[in-house]
Amino acid sequence: MADLRKNPRGGWNAASLPDLSGRTAVVTGANSGIGSVTAQALARAGAHVVLAVRDEARGRAAAARMSGSTEVRRLDLADLASVREFASAWDGPLNLLVNNAGVMMLPRQRTRDGFEMQFGTNHLGHFALTNLLLPQVTDRVVTVSSGAHRWSGAVIHFDDLDLDADYTPQRAYAQSKLANLLFTLELQRRLTESGSPVRALAAHPGYAATNLQSHTANPAARVFLKLGNRLFAQSDEAGALPTLYAAVRDLPGASYVGPDGMGEMRGAPTLVGRSRAASDPEAARRLWEASAELTGVGFPAEAKAA
Image (cartoon, rainbow, N blue to C red; front, side):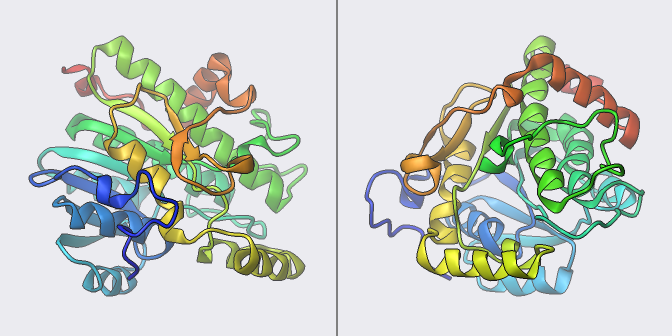
């Protein structure tokens, strides 16, 4: 694996991580791309990192390439039974939860529970996982969103969350990434209101070359994205830096971290803005209530403990 400590731009990079010895982190989707790079950096800094992955064989292969303390546990975010099983097996404190896994611009598909795949995986799976693990979380939750939350027409379709009436891969992806930011906003509100010291933050990688784009529904889009990856994108190592920055820096709750370059496409990690739709507290509350109803999981009373 590439060495994240080398950053040609200078400034904050993975070498800036503090000593994380004695801390435990869970990174979802840690067998490839930004998730794998994030897990590698945290483990190298001394954390014990749990790679939460759907494919355990691929997870073990990724862990074998990492230095430091790691383990692999199965987690399928498109199956709420798997989410519950992962959470119920957790024992002991969890310092950091990184909600990284995601799918992008897929043909119309359903999760095992019948939800539209992108909304179900990118948002509902992480919503349930976070709330089920929250009584054990001691420091922070970092959820990976995307600049796609700003795409034209990106809204939460409250009357048709599965987009049955008008599905497009792009619309579904943008909704799921907007949901990530609204989830972070409402989670932080509830944590603050309950007196919890835990912080909820979000990050986005900019335009990073990963295998996520290879699963898009449109063949022409796959070719375009592959070319863009080669010509314009930053590496997945650079793309992981906003997540790592959000994971260890002393930032206010509900902060959003992304690259500092033009259009937030590439660059060093910094605090960035978000769309008006992603800053709407009423939409955040409404999404939370809908998500709790759909998943059967709500904000845990145990999270109120300071």
